[in-house]
Length: 205
Length: 320
Image 1: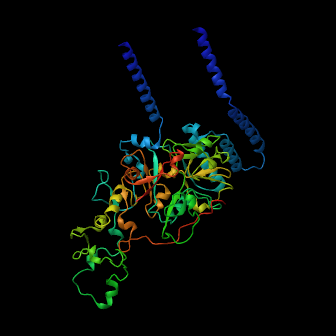
Image 2: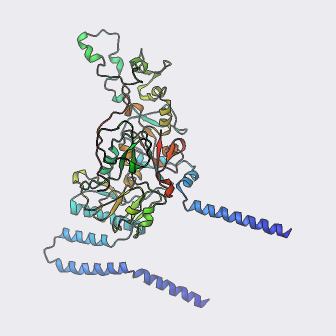
Image 3: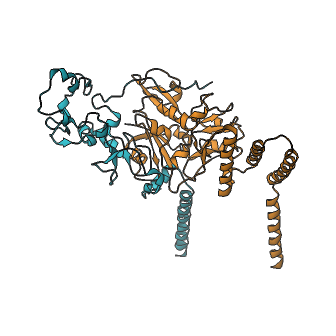
């Protein structure tokens, strides 16, 4: 009987030391992965006051990020001839003004192969101040991610989480991200080839 | 009882004696006395007041301590001296911060190798932000143009200059990975480089002796050496600087990416992440479960470069 007590006591002692040593390893830092797993409390990134004031115009996104809200860059301000309904009326237009009024400068390079998208596949047919999705629901220009996400749902999922797209200026503070159209031209969304901004010297110099 | 108390007293006395007369402080006191003497001699001479102020500041700078051993007061003093020296020597109005790391912050970085197009905007922004030597064309970031299927940058082309992206190639950026278990820190014989509590590996440029052991120890080619006096045109100088970050380096010291410590500790993104036009660079707090970097680590396919070395870098690559 005594022996059993003694051995069980020893066992507890050993377990205890193993547990304690594991605890001290954690406390002294441990690997990055351990520290990430141990950190489950949200960080108060609003507490960093220097990250508060963005000099850009934003709108509250109509989606949620990690259960909270976030903002996207406003789009309508950067559309040069918004509101579209100023021109798109029932009024008749002179032929000589046609070049000015039709969007002859826009080249559509959106869609696979020869299946280029038509204007009204994204723009609302009746109210030109809005976009419209496949079901005909009107979508604001500032919230184009709702439209793009219909086809590019994988990119939208990544964008909502933060693996696609870009945060604006700050890693802390309120989450402000770029809109789809901040980086991609909606009419020709693929990135262009161009010369790099600079170059590097050979490594073995 | 009595005798042990006596012993303790004796110990304290010797402690104090030893502390008061370290070799460094002895030499410092001696030299200050000498300087005062020589200053007394030359005041009647032709040395201008500005010159003697510069000499005095340099003198004080020469005997300052390792940054980690400084009190807050000493840190403020050295920053003030460096700002004044920059004004006297180059007529430059700079601000040097000594902002401390924040609590519960561990910086991490993720790089999307399927999005990067090799535009090199990150490299250019880094050079400008960090006052990198324009003469030797020092760059902290290297982008490698790689054949698909390869994951070792040594197989890629690091000096491309043609229209990008090229069909069938992908681009992989390499910089300091801010390892938790960094070989460069272990290699440093003067403890001039260390990991801050927020995970950034920094260099005290005034404590570095330029032996380049860290350069040899780093398996990621993350460190750069100043073979000559760094040159930055005055109009291009970034005046918002940090003691451990982008303040001007000198000839013969190591430097490296600091995750833009002068920006990130204020909540800003590093210059490379802000400049990237493709959104390939994700930066954030690893200890915040709601951060974007944590989303990437949790939901994307990630890997770390040379993870088998056990350096535990805080820089991940991911694919869409």
